[in-house]
Image (cartoon, rainbow, N blue to C red; front, side, top):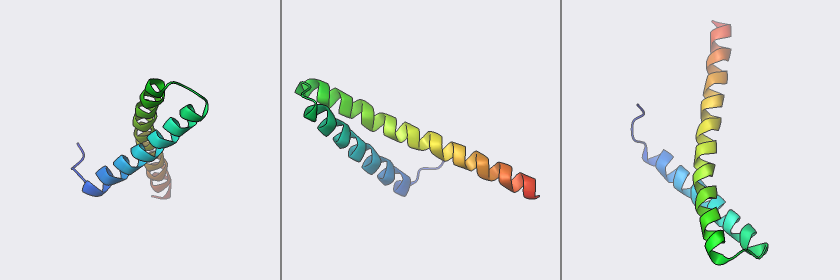
Length: 71
């Protein structure tokens, strides 16, 4: 398990908010109803943090493999 990290929490909240707002504005610009815009913003914000987590895992695995080769 990972220890609680306040900096990581703040980063995830900011990332989620930014992507959620961007998705909301894009959906609104396409003329979608306000409820759909809000729902898409929530999904977009959640998926942004999940994608960021998956990307972190990928980078960590690549670094581990590189370190293993050098050993």
